[in-house]
Image 1: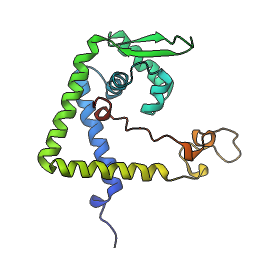
Image 2: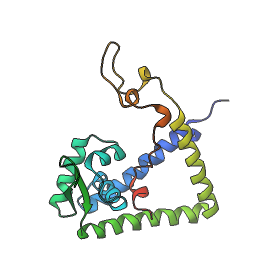
Image 3: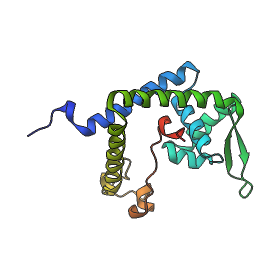
Length: 186
């Protein structure tokens, strides 16, 4: 029996993620910002002192992209780079007090969505849903894709290395969801 497209769990998870990103994009734009900038503020709020390269890994973008986003946030007086006391090549990121109202807005939106979830699903169903998503994330994380089939894998004969080539898959860290919903939860 073939599942219909509207009941396909992989498509639904992808579509819900897309819808959540769109909603956060819309909210961020009201403040003249992007969802990526909100993600950075959220992650730095959650883990003050992250380096730009650590942050790039977490939100799954190139380090130069983080550098440009941080430039904009720094220009607005929302965060600052501080020199790492042990390695002068590394900049540590810290939110400044003017970022707090934006973090409050992100938290309020998150709380509003969770309230709506609870109204529609109930708290027990939400908890069961979260438990199921955690299991799915663990399952997907455990799936090993042959390097030759990985997105961005080097072409045949190429000497380039991918992240999966340089890291033992069994030691790969399960990183938390990088959505703004996740980054401001307490």
